[in-house]
Image (cartoon, rainbow over all chains, first blue to last red; front, side, top):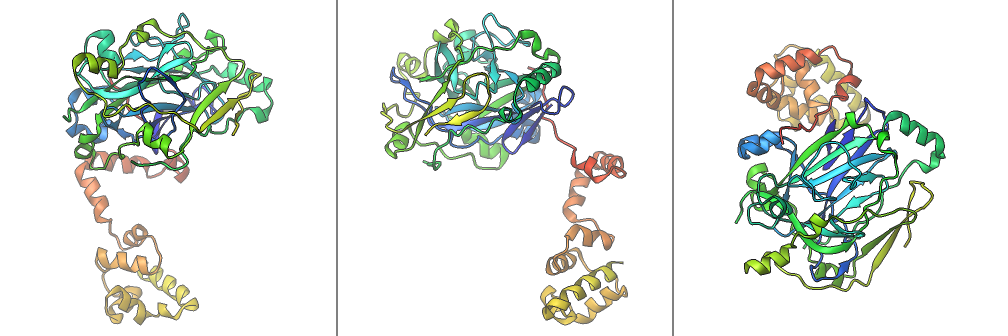
Length: 339
Length: 115
């Protein structure tokens, strides 16, 4: 079952275990430059507002209502990252797709879990996902573009602008596997405190409705190999959600509420001396990148080929303040920040 | 019942603060003291929704509770029910005997559709 709590999607599986609760939120962030360099992790600037599609059905396209789920507003060229949090440490396998193209493998959406290649992220080891896994240890940032203009990953892989948005599916570990894990671990090692990846102060800085996500600049981020036996995941208990992305320019007319302000540029943020982040998890192995996703052209590259200017700016930055975040080894799920 | 409830509350407040005399409360709510006195004694039909809301605010009471004691339903709730009368009538009847903690556990799921 999935609920909206504030602006978080809360997946819970009371039929599997009372501890089986996963929070997923979609963080506003700044767009990293697409300048051929590998950037550090940008900050979270707060959650995107999420609304039930059903609450605004009269003003939405029929296919949005048919798909159900929730919606959020993004400006063209705005970036997003996804935060996963399991308050009790209960493990989840989470599949993420954009336009029904898997963000880890580049393959079309499939139910279930696969290991060859691994087509999901394993939480709580994986605290966030910022983009498409283009190479081992590197992603290309999720960047919003109008659906139909040819920039989204979906359009480049399938040739069609059909779905857009973002799809999230979560599966819990089986009850008996969790109970085994709990017995193996000391009680104090179970609770994962939230990982701080937020700016000290949130610096604020053709309206077709549906948006999709395309590939932005490169970022250092590993997607960790799942170490659980595949049969420990409870495949019968999955929940999934379609997250529609509405152009911020039409958000107000649909919902009657203001969308968030345009985020600062990477240059403005860096010039203000605000922190970027680097994440280390010792003892974990990263999955390989996807050849399909590596072949996707970034929004900037495609824009140049088309003679468009799809990004309002793309100034290279040199962060001086990079905060390392660190996960303890030895399988413990305690997260520790090292400043 | 409404009258007793309002009078007991006002008199309890007056013990610690003289501004809660019948006259002063009536003045702040915008009615004649004689009218408020009749309401408290149950000798007058309940005042309007607006007056009851002002009274509830003045006496730090929950407005929906005061309206219910006066045999009224808040106009915003009436509007909600009027928009989908069958659904809300069925829902309220369904919930009427549930204990509070069961009602508080009602959650709204994000609907998954066809995609």
